[in-house]
Image 1 (cartoon, rainbow, N blue to C red):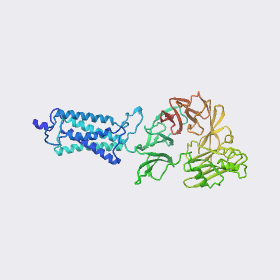
Image 2 (tube, rainbow, N blue to C red):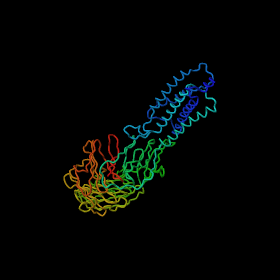
Image 3 (cartoon, one colour):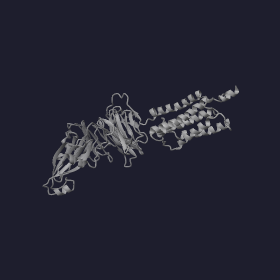
Image 4 (cartoon, rainbow, N blue to C red):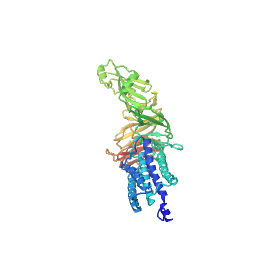
Length: 572
């Protein structure tokens, strides 16, 4: 009885061969999962913490070799104390590897400063391999001594249990915890919030996962749509909660953009046989974040309001401009190129000088025929143009980019016909907003703050450190006026991203000083006069916002906090 009990692992302090065999299965499963993931990845796993974790591979082989009694008879069989000592040392090394290979961000609450970190799949699977090796070692240590892998009908099922457990955990890890492409689709969103009439304070903050940058913030039905360096995340404007997200942190992402009511994420997918990089563009529905199609023939457009190196030549060629005409400026609006053109009067006494200078405006004695021309670079057609005469010596037209809260593209032209400021539909050339004559020709007009099909907001300098802002309906009626006095907007550009239009107010964000170590948010309700001492002037220490966007449910401010950017949601 005694001999049999010892052979089977009996006794008050021994658990028998079952934990040893399951531990061996965990070691086998760890090696099997390492090979499997390396095949799937097309190369060996790489941990961001270094290559020390590779010690677990020979360690697993050593434990399997020395922790089992593979032969029935040994010339010098190791004693139980020796087995326990060396197995304890090996387990301590395995536990150290578990600690050193721990992937930051795998579990909630393990990230520094509470900032979200997306754990790399390689790091997570490396940690699984190391944990399986350490647990297998501990189970074999718990057996108290070495056991034979016999009888096979009992040994193999136990090994299978350990190996299958590792594989199941690995599959669950890859599917639910650290997928290669973290993708969450929105559920029932309910009715969207309205753009707030005004705001009174910060209701929420949101930081992108560490390692990602905020590239742009746009508006979707329920709040801000945050375009990141590795994907896109849609937030709820009222609460700041993530509604849906699509990230590719493990693939090189070229560009993320919105166009034609879709979100596009262009990324690297591999290499061709010739060694060229292959790319694909995932097209998402912004309503819920679903991928509606994947295409390889979509390239990112030029940024709104920018211009490319050859845009002047493209516009001149498509519109078939006369040889003596000069394209003085161009801006992109989606696929449209909007250009200002000057054709000097051939009878002017400085005609040749105007042609050689590539700037025909402003020359005394030489009148200019000015044109505003819009072409579609994709269809290679001219959509529309406007022509007018500019007297000799007068300043030529110039375009301004402004925020476009609504759909469509807006052309803002200063020094247009008879010196007026025009707000036009980029696709049709029709007037979106007809500015009142007393403002369109005014010398104190600082510019257009924002414009879309629902109206515009303009700024006038009406006194020393006094700016008056008018909200204007498409018909030209002034529907609201806000006055800001005693505030020097040293870092705010009229028509820039630092001014947002709320339902019943304007919001300004900026820095209190040139260093940018503290900032302010000023809310100017229409119908009121506000200033530096007003209750609606709110200060923040340690950081300043550079951009403000009115979205359903909140005013979103893009804030620089040290080297990183975050979003502040200002709510009523």
